[in-house]
Length: 244
Image 1 (cartoon, rainbow, N blue to C red):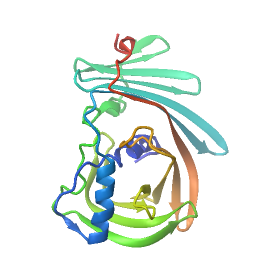
Image 2 (image 1 turned 180 degrees about the vertical axis):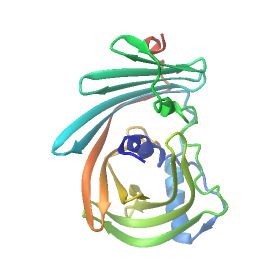
Image 3 (image 1 turned 90 degrees about the vertical axis):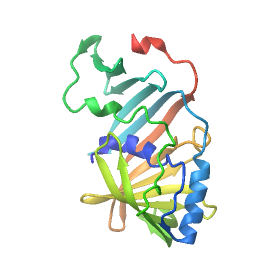
């Protein structure tokens, strides 16, 4: 799992829409039920979101702006990525993918074809406790690196993320005293990733939170990126020029 997958992962981890009967203690269930209730929203037919990610690396800031446009009914999608003055547009329609850079259309490089994997799955469709063998336990109060503290629930089960090559089995959800999800810790190879959500969701009942991402090593949390949702539009007419 690379840092490039983090925005998509940041967005996917909150898309929870139901509880099943699993091995869950009472307090864990109470907190997760609140999370499920927050994630309920009506069916989405179109999505147009723009997100800016700033990565802090070697004393420098790398800013990437990504616009993702999805037509669920028509099974079309467009991704416009801008970084360091360069703009790349990828479009999926009629079962085929194209890539445009600098006004020129070119073959899609190997490894970039997965950008739309899972794109047409409705947000809110993942039920993290549908796995009958899933386990969720309440861990009490936790504190990580001075940047995230609250009541933790540890979930262990099937937590694969479509299109990202992520097959996580354990995720730690952190809630404030009011039961609101405020962050997550995700164990990864070599280090843990820490997500701290900031502000209110850009769309009620959705996963579109601004946030900060940290590398957690022992008791030290090192900021490596921030995410800001510049705009989120749902069920509005799409810019058809993106698909021409």
